[in-house]
Image 1 (cartoon, rainbow, N blue to C red):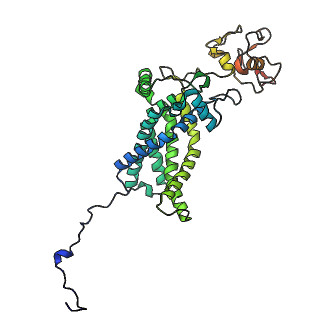
Image 2 (cartoon, helix red, strand yellow):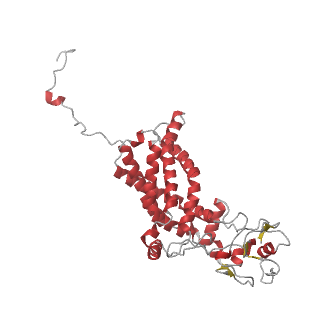
Image 3 (tube, rainbow, N blue to C red):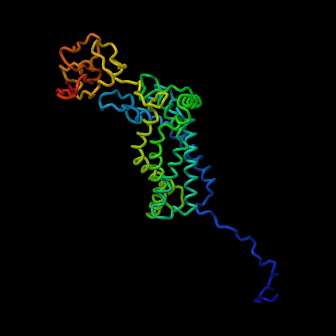
Length: 369
């Protein structure tokens, strides 16, 4: 062939496209919903394994001082680091992984269902509407919370259990995760496994909506400012960190409520009953039905209790209830019915046995009638 001449045209068979065209476009969400379910469950379980010690500490801190005025209860857990040390001293190093199996089950169920539902919402194009991402995230989170609620109930019970000296909140005394499920089912039936779900639904719905809405925005924001290259792992990590902070801030109030709802004791018929764990003077003077242990004072039934307040100044002198609370002793002098128409209980609390009309408040904020 002479120089500069064109090569002969190849046969038509060689001109055919080597790769067949795709018959259908990829899913709108990028991956099938079933894949999102597996990936979401796996990622949630891995995160649970790493953060479960913080979950134990968080549960103890949220139950500490439950429904008690500030300053009237002991605080065995103070701050994250000191609380972690306290857990290790009371329960050993393994105590930081209490409730891990239940936590893994919860994360697998909740996150798997959550990402599965959100992927379906993406495929349906719902996230393309204004506010669609937030709404889809909230609905997906609510469904995931309902599915995983029994596991979270057991996780909360197990993580709250510890030695009596370090106990906060009610102690359910489960031996294992299987024993916990069995005990709850035997006492309260299937409905009992979903006790507390009313607090979990808004908790996860708010957290899921904020997380899914802020993650992509935060990731794009750091890339627009050229802090990280678009598509890099650093941009994804930064977006996740910003999203995590937003979730923690918005979800914490709901988280406290949810933890206390899950851990509160209930009777066989589902009626909420007071916790048996009492601190300080309440532990020294346990109150029983119809009166106070070790007291010669009049006994009050539940219908005779009109007003309950806690002493605002435990160090006040001359106040019998404050003295009784600050220095419990069986020899402490107590007011008699003849000297006062009200009678005191532990921690500076006063039960009125007569009509609240005409009551007055003394210097220690006790109501006397």
